[in-house]
Image (cartoon, rainbow, N blue to C red):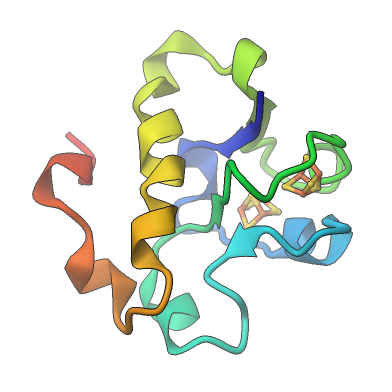
Length: 103
Ligand code: F3S
Ligand code: F3S
């Protein structure tokens, strides 16, 4: 299982979760050019150790354990997982597949 960041992060991008994560698996990193371009942050499902430390620090409650993710935000599971494809690229916002944009 993993944790997933959902819609409330969009436009908020508080980044408290980044500081709380012990394995630094929330991307794009603050020092990455992509950080400013992305409208939200994502959890790398491979790196995430499922510790839950990021959940209580998010001011807009955007982070959920996969099992607790509200159905209406189910698409965010894939959206977070797609992050893996972003590694090593610049301008992840423009690289995001069209089907991942919000309806
Ligand atoms: Fe990181 Fe733990 Fe959350 S590994 S992304 S703080 S569940
Ligand atoms: Fe987003 Fe909440 Fe983290 S708003 S950046 S998930 S602290």
